[in-house]
Image (cartoon, rainbow over all chains, first blue to last red; front, side, top):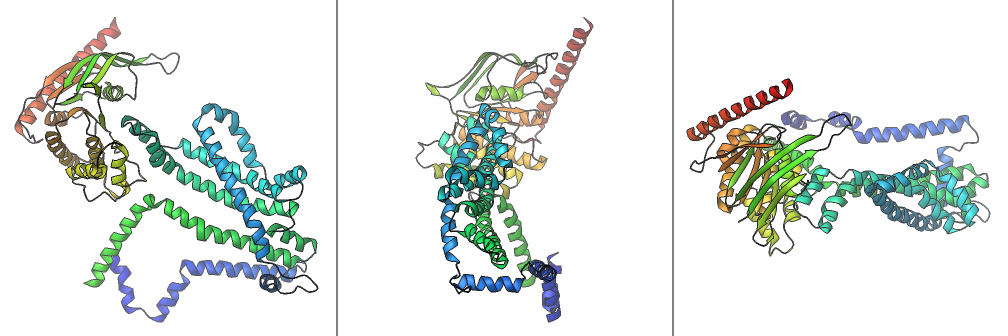
Length: 294
Length: 258
């Protein structure tokens, strides 16, 4: 089996390398981006009011470098992010804290579940825009409305995931801990928290993604700076390339955050589950080295 | 040395539905074990073997009667080997051992290593359970049970989920560890050969959780499953189980006809 893998490397020409590149995952991903770019260009050609890629990236270049958009308007890039990120972080942090507490209470008590679970499901179903409107009506313009919109949108997802995690702690392991009279602190640290980690992590990822959507909606209606405000600024000015440009920045931020931070954290948290896989992989590598070495 | 006293123990499970009858798992069971002794509880499935262990370990409450595990003045410590390994999958072997070892222990790491060495897994401390075979996981479960230095060790069909060859190796290993550590063991199984090979005494349970016979097994140790004496004792015990089955069937037939 490994011989088949090792054999072509001996007689590999430039053509073989090229054909392997076209079949790789990296190429597939690249091709999908290229396809989207072409599609975007086509839409822009047939729909005048929709700005094409060249126009939008030209705009973004000015915005990022702080150049002039004509008149007194100058490009802004770091300022909106600097205004948004603290609101986003605070909103997500509050959702996590209250989501975990709510989840533990509902997950641990039948009565609390009967009282609160349906309310929670209603909250899950409510779109962020409802909170953006309501908080603006209640609190007016300012940071509070934005942070609370973020928190109210993201928090139910954290709570629902934590409830599932708590209810999924294996009964066998709970009984084992009981027969050995394991102290509560150890049970919390080595049984309950690790059992919930996967669910908590899923909840965190939801909170980040939903929270990011919500913070921008909140800023659209209630802020005078930030990424959401900047999108609205260009929208109100009828500059669609500006609006589309900020939508791209908005998507790019969440994709990068997910790939660079969340996925890595997840891999770390699930080391125990991947250990099996890496053991077999190590073995396969050893066999391969043995064959090529011989 | 620990003493386990079971006096007139009864356990009935209430009817699940309104029209069904309640079931008796254990019926007026009394016995006493103490000292460095290996006692097996053998019987057909549904005779209350696991329920007995659950009551002794305190997971379940008896319906009536008494169970006392004593070790001088203090409360006795229990070790428990389950049918499945029941290890924390997200913790390494060493962390799994430390999870159960008492807080006041001088050097818990040293203690854990000692018992891992007894089952031949002293080098597996850093591995996760998923990296070990089923037999190795069960050996960790056994090392864990011994590592709390229990006064009474409960074992619930610990080899029933393993293949025959692995199970056989583990039975011999268990005999050695038991001889070294001098623990009181209550071992539940439905495998008569296993019971004969390991035990000093066998408690035969009849369906309905009644004690049918208390059979001493007085054979030299270490014993192997292939020893002639073991095979003969097994055949003898099997005959008694057949008789027990016939009596039970006859009683049941009489019950139906009356």
